Length: 464
Picture: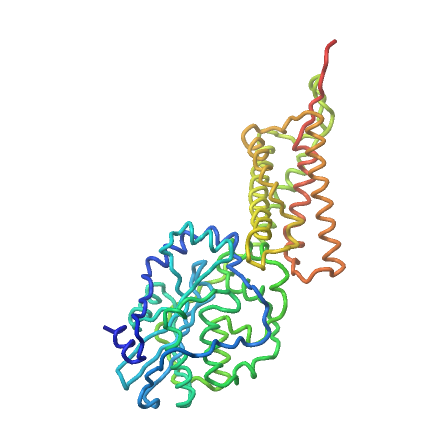
């Protein structure tokens, strides 16, 4: 009934699509959790780093039936606080339209996507950078009820607009709910549920908002990602590793309004909000422990293992002199545990950055400097780590294989040195200070341990 009323009010000749159920949205995102944690290019996908406000497409098509009296039309900014899941940690923005002329009350939400193609295909499209989102329209009770279930604070602010500005915005919303305009190509920083509201408001205001928001802020896109994922350490760490220097430039005030709370604050400073209400209030997610501090804790077992070093005795004709670890049953298993963590994370990050660079349109993971530290081939080291963990002794290999293993780690060390030189001489804009301080020492010490005691060379003996 409510959609039929909207069709009648806006003089549309086709049915409007109802939003997807909350269960479908939640299920799709849950199935993408691992993908978002690792690729994420959370999600952070930007095709272009545009400085200027995009111009909304022209309004064309059939005539729109306008309300008789725009003084009876009110627009409200709906701002939803961040949630405690990987998919809602940036918050959300929607527009509420109340038209007393026709007793219409609807919420316009640009944050919906269609998972009916199947979660596997949807995940594959996401990984390739194909993300089609769309506008959904629903009654306030349905929309706000979702946020109450998710325990997220919701603010409602009436927008101060003239009748002419309301008319422009009304026409844009009517244009947007036509079938051919519902779907758009989602971009996390530059075309999302919040920037759609920002752009349409700016259009209605005649470009005033964008003109007033050209100044640079002190924050970068990376700062925004870190701040909003402080409650999810694994996501915070993964995104920080996987995202390249494209997100390390300072945002303008206009660009920063991709964040719902930033848009609300900017509109408030511009004097465009009134009748501010808190529709529901819940505590915001609390910041968890810094993930880099957790990563740095791996230095402790590495130092303990360093203290366990001792010279190896020649136990048989086939053995070679060198170093081993005291209490091998315990120490080699500890080495295996640390090695398994490092190999899995390093290998997965390297795999995502490599395949993302080759096959994905996610520009924010292309050409990442961190590929010098994290290699896809490190995943094979997990097999060696499991050997240490299960046997409690060094991996015995032939002289030829020992050479190959040592060469691999030497190249790894050389790549790390190149990494240091690039950063030290300012040859990159990518911010990697936390990796240098907390992660690189762990990787360096672990590599030294592996080269010293992890692989035992066995001498070949021939009888003639």
